[in-house]
Image (cartoon, rainbow, N blue to C red; front, side, top):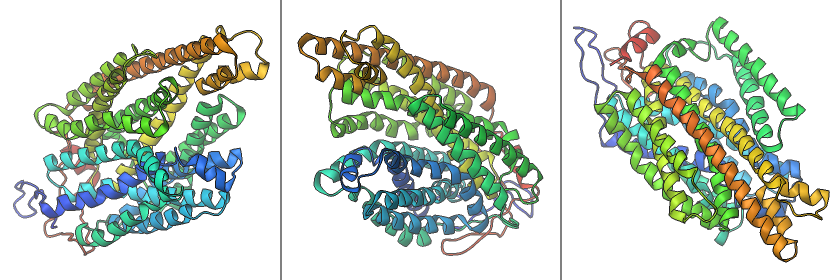
Length: 550
C-alpha cells in the first residue's frame, strides 16, 4: 500500500486520498483477529472457573486475581503501549504482542498452580495492551479515505463488542468437549495466523523524530490506571471500604502527576493538545458514557437470565448473542448515516435509541417473555454501537497520523474506565434497591447468617430458600426475584438518564466535527514489508486539528 498525499507539495492543490482496495480490506480482517480475541479474553473465564478451581485449588483471593489481573494490567498499560507503538512502529508492536499473547495463552492453558495462572493472565494483559491500540491505529494508516475509514472502524467496533458476547459461548462449547485450558489455547492459532499475514498485508508506521521514550510518564500512567480500576471494581464488589478508597486516591494523585509530567517533558508520551479539540475530547467522553451503560447493565441481564429465568450459563450466553446480531447490523449503518448527517446528531440519535431500550427494560418483570428482554437489549445495544463506532472514527480523525497510537490508547483507556465506573455505580445502585426490597420479605426464624446471605445477592437468597420448608421457600424466591427486578429497573433508568445526558453533550461537543483530513508530505510512502514514516506538513497537531472540521 502506498500512502499518497492529501495535499500536493508542489502546487498546493488538494488531491483526494487514496482509496483502499482488496489488500487493505483483507488486512482489516487480519486486524480483527487480535481485537476479537483480546475482547473475548475478558469474558472467556466465566464458565471455566469451576473447572480450574477444582484442579488448581486457588484460594478465594487467588481466584479473584485470576479473574481480574488481566483487565488490571490491560487498562494500566494501554497508554504506554500506544505511545510505544508510535515510536518503534505499530506493526512491529502488534507482531510482538501477538507472540507474547500466544505464548502467554499456552502458559495459561498448561498452568500447574494458581500462581502460574495469575502470572500467565498478567502476561496476557501485557500482550492485549500491545494489540488493541495497534489495531485501531493501523486502521488509521490503512484507510486514508474518510468514508472507508468510517466503515472500517464500525466493523472494528462491532468485532470488539461481539467478542465480549462470544467469549462465554466459546468457553462453554470448549468446556463441553475439552479441559479448561482449551479456553486459552484457542488463541494460539489466531496469533500464528497474524504473525504470518501481518508482515505481508500491514504497513509499518512510526512517528518521525519521536525522541526518547518517557519511562517516568509510563510508570505514572500505570500508577494512575491500575489502582483506579482496582478501587472502582472493589467498591462494586464489596462496597466502600478503606483499601479501595485509598487505591482510588492513589490513582487520582498519580493521574495528576502524569498530566504534569506530560506538560513538562521534552518528549511526552501524549499530546495533551488533543484534548483541546472537541472532536477528540468529546469522542473519548462519548465512548466512556457508552461503555458505562454497556458494562453496568450487562451484569444485571446475565443474572436475570441465569437466576430469575433459571437458564444454564451456556444457554444464557447463547441467547445473549441475539442482541449482538443487531449490533453487527448497526455498526456499518452508522457509517452510512454519518455521510448524510452531522455526526453529532447521529451520535445523539444513538444515545436516544439507547434511552428507548433502557426505558423498555424498565418494564421487565420476572415473568416477562424472553423476547421482551432480548428485544430491549438489542435496542439499547444498537444505539450504543453507533455511539462507539462514530466516537472511534472522530477521535482518530482528529488525531494526526503520527499520534494515532496514543489516541487509540486513550480511547481504550476511556472505555476501560467507563466500564469499571458502570459496574461500580449501577451495580451499587441496583444492589441497594435489592437489599431494601428483600429486607421486609425475609421469613421469621432465619439465622443472622442466613438472613445476611439472602440480603446480599439474589443467588444467596435462592440458596437460603432452597433450605426452607414448603411455602416459606417459595415466598422468599418470589420476593427475591421481585426485589432483584426492582434493582434492575433502577439501574436501567439511571443508565437511561446518563444516555440522555450523553445525547445533549454529543450535540454540544461534536456539532460540526468531522474526521480529519491530514496532510502527508509528497513522496513519502509506507508499503507492506517496509519501514516507512509518514509525517505531516507544518505543525502536525495544528494541521490535523484545523482539518478536522468539515
